[in-house]
Length: 82
Image (cartoon, helix red, strand yellow):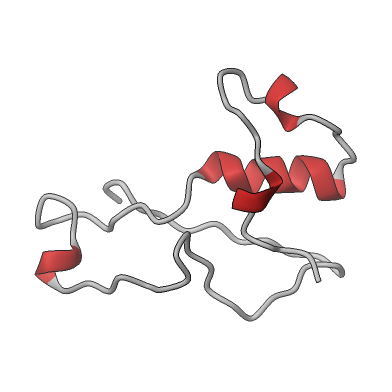
């Protein structure tokens, strides 16, 4: 609950067995790493994950057309596929 959450990606092409974050490091649950001293910090914008799924799995050339107001950038994708 709070701000941070988890997403799971399943499938034959998914490069699994990893925890992915924006900067590559899990911030942990120490009080100084929590948002407002209570919530998990957000490390990845869920739209970056959705954009990668749209692009790599569903073949959508420009995920921005499906995610209004969001500028999709492949470089921000979490790297779900091997």
